[in-house]
Length: 612
Image 1 (spheres, helix red, strand yellow):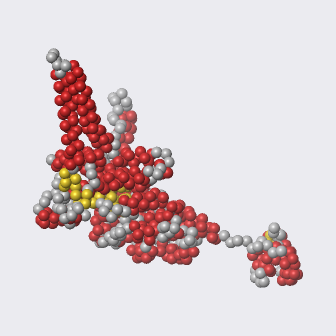
Image 2: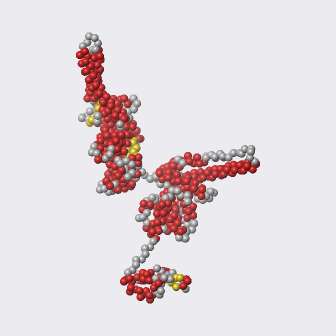
Image 3: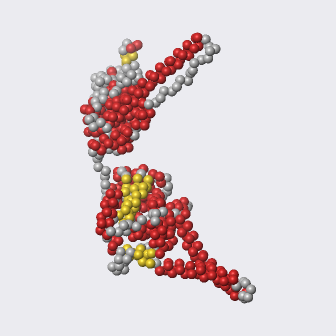
């Protein structure tokens, strides 16, 4: 946008040979003169201007998320940004003495007309002030000898009245400008918001609308003065982290500010459309209006722009920048100085044994520090190697990193911790390689639900006494239990939404990074970016689904005809009548049903013992 503005400015300068008027430096007094004594006129020449200047104002909705009226924070941020850019004094003068730009009555090309009323009023006040001062001066001279006392009193009365009236008029104008200078629009709106039950006040929205209209007229005045178009670009961020009602309030405020077709405002919503649509659909005040959040956004947003997928070079550059931001930590890790030993050589009063023990302790401490220094240097080297694998274009790991910059930084910040924990676990660095460590971090970051499911299946199989072989692949474990995971889709819908592309997951574990069960168990103890509550939730759902409901009891009247037949087919059934009758009621009884449900007492010669 800045490049477009510079290009249009150069083209307009070649066309009309008019330089834009400055508003700072030596142009500031000239701006005040135009504000007080001249009336701007919207001409055809002004409407044909193509040069434009953008004023960027950033609004973070998260900063105002705790307030009752988030849209009020939007308006106050807009007013404060314009006030800060052009200064408080010009806007204060315009608020008191300014006039709304008028339209051209005909084909007049004059952009400025003299404000005769203001000039005449100011001349009248100055003339009255001069007259009053002169009368007071004459009244003082009339007190001398030879002059009448009545004439001096009359001059003093008229002079004092003229001075008071003219001086009070000038002081009122100065007081109004000073009041607007120290009490900004932001303070006015915040004062209205802080009042109790301000939402029910009839004139509250009217006051806010007046402030916005005054701001719009001031920008129109500056457009004619600077000989260029002005557009205020408000960047709205953090809206998808607020409550649904707050989101609706901000969107309503945006629609209100854009209701005027000539409003010089451009709003850029930096949001996730899916979250914003869900907020609109769940807001109670939007029932019947935004039942479909996407349709409401289509009616509001005039230029949808979805950030395209990163290319290979762009992603590698972002990963490289994220890794470079860790250089300060790596540098401190590699150049950490050894701490000086705290023990010194003992005094001469000690014997040879004390001095020898002290020297041995110092040597032992120095050797431990040297060993720790070597370990730290090796750990720093492995961290650097692991981070290099992320942005190495010869490696395929960067293809699995998401395009989100926040996720990139999360992965980069997790890798050094994982490598350090691996070092504490395996002091000789005989465990997984740095490439495997960073690949495991990416796996846990991109597919937390599927990885948790694989780990939970391994844990359940191990508890059941049938643990898989250490060389078995994780993808095979996932493939064998994928049907069961599919049956839990409804219960794990929110967790499954955290995962990335399923096809990339298959390629990740099946071809590029075929982790085994043994490697997974080693890396799991060093994993810090995987939420273990997901695995616990899966374990509970899996345990509940494994429970079988008991068979419903049969009524005695329904089972009476079957008792005789049951006695003929299963001897000893009188010991377990309930269990056998339920089997007969189903119409068939296996030959081994009595043995499966009737434990035998070895102390009684293998006879079946009674069961409750």
